[in-house]
Image (tube, rainbow, N blue to C red; front, side):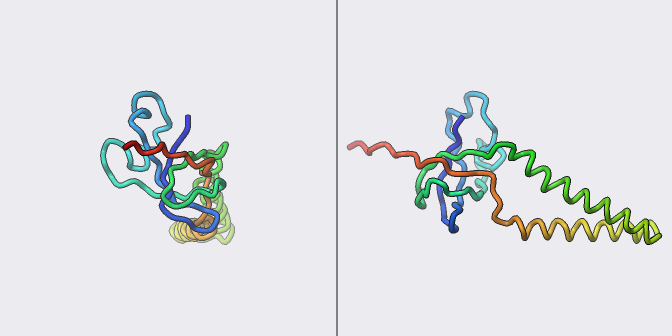
Length: 142
């Protein structure tokens, strides 16, 4: 199943896009991305995401996008496993220093916050979406 998006801006090799959910997608099973990003029937503002602009799509064009294989697994690793591992490591280190329980919890929480902030800075332009091709627009009638 193809996903379509509109290019709103360009940032070097990346494009800022919003996913276009067509009425046809609502009739059958689909990925649900449009609902998750706020573009469904609720009428809420759509979320802008970054995608690799492999097709060199210009601003304002409608494009077909693809999600990298195993993107969910990679994102879960970055968002959950790495912070959890640093949190547990900090608790083990605090226990090695024989800190009291509250100080160990505070140290673990501090390391967790620092890990999440560091990941946010390092991965601010990380994306698992890529633009496959620019969709040709049908000629205007009349």
